[in-house]
Length: 393
Image 1 (cartoon, helix red, strand yellow):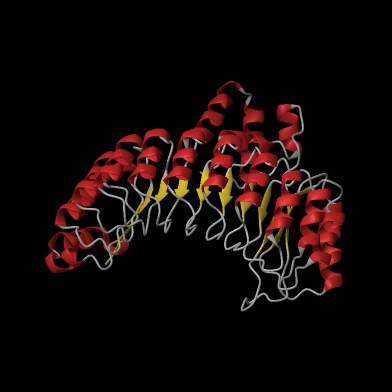
Image 2: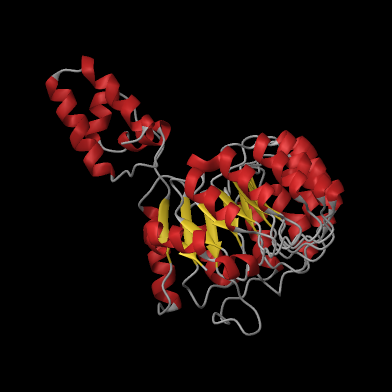
């Protein structure tokens, strides 16, 4: 049981035995895992009749998940969406990632069945030439429908849709003012103008994934920094137009960042990485892979400013040496769970020894193609023997 759940149970001490028993029975029915927060715990407990008698009020219903299967006919699909939507009061999550025939008509059916303003999340798998889901085709009309009828949309995942132009995102998504999670990876047409418009309209944005969006650059990052201060997760990996200017703006304007991926942004140097270390103390996961210009100094700054890192990916950062890795292990050691150091040719046994000494809770280590480690091998083999399959070499 984590600290949040423990706090909830502490309040049971003053309850009569009957209510305590009802609470525990309700908790068992809630199917909560150890990662739920106290707020989520209390909210989930309010959905049963038992909890209503305990707390004296009824919380809003949880989102209803509608998972669309691969083999359903159009009629079966529409009927099940309609049936699911009719059984709840509000908030529907439509998961179409396994559906091979999700198109504008299916989306319209989902919105209609979910009742007005009820669509909460829409998750769609990638489509396009060569995709296994070639029947999944959403057009600009689908985005227009989302913007017009789904003002309470909370999460949208829409990767690699070749039939939707950047202008469609620019004109429709800003209307979804409650949008908090937006995933548009591989949207090659997406550019600064569209992302600036989205930032202006979706100021509650907390998570954004525009991996390999060809037109996204510093202007978009400056707009996000100015208008989306709640941003906690950002991936601009592979966006070649992103430079230190944009990364510094994000670091200064979005101090609540917990995860950042700027891998393969070749123009990012020590200046951008240092800014993240100085302004984003809440960082838990960083991906700086394939940044050929960063050096030990910037990584040491990150290690000092972000002591609670759980995931560190530094593949192909050719200038890094033992000094950076040892400092990271010293600062974040007990918290670190995943460490990727592939193709760092300057690493020696000192880095592996630091991992063994400080990273007691490490779950995954990868150090493929580290030439000096391969030649030395002693510390690496000892760590592999002690930690079993955690080390990939």
